[in-house]
Length: 209
Figure 1: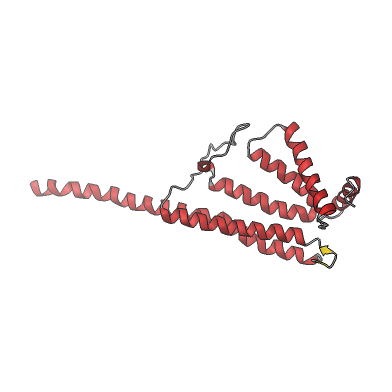
Figure 2: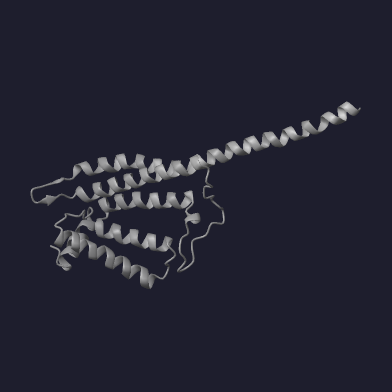
């Protein structure tokens, strides 16, 4: 009886050890899962780049309509590579990775984003917005695409006052469009169909054409 009782505790301790190993493996998988969004973003750059091959790249007069979308795609791919390198270094150091919570809420008005709040979900949202922006500049035109992007990022940053967000987005998109077209002589995408007509009328209205 004594031998049986003395051997019982080690058997009871073996189960928690197995659970710890399993939990450690799941935690490691969760750490490496942060690489999925940036890798998906890089993969999406390929079809987006191919979509710009139908546009002229420019000549002696200056860059063509394909220049700006390709510049955005290249910068986006570069930012994803930097993000991957940072995530790999973080995982290898064993630093805690931001966890997603079901009750994760948007920041309040005027709140500043902290580094600890940069979760994989928010990274995925930024990637989705960037991809949508590139597609939007192709079909909606640069001005409308930039206008919507600025609004989205301001809302994500906690700015929900539309009386401030909408005018600011309009000033940024139209102001940069005027600078690129009139000063830098850069041909921006004007979109297709009715969006193309709207962009051309807008450029004529602000004196860019």
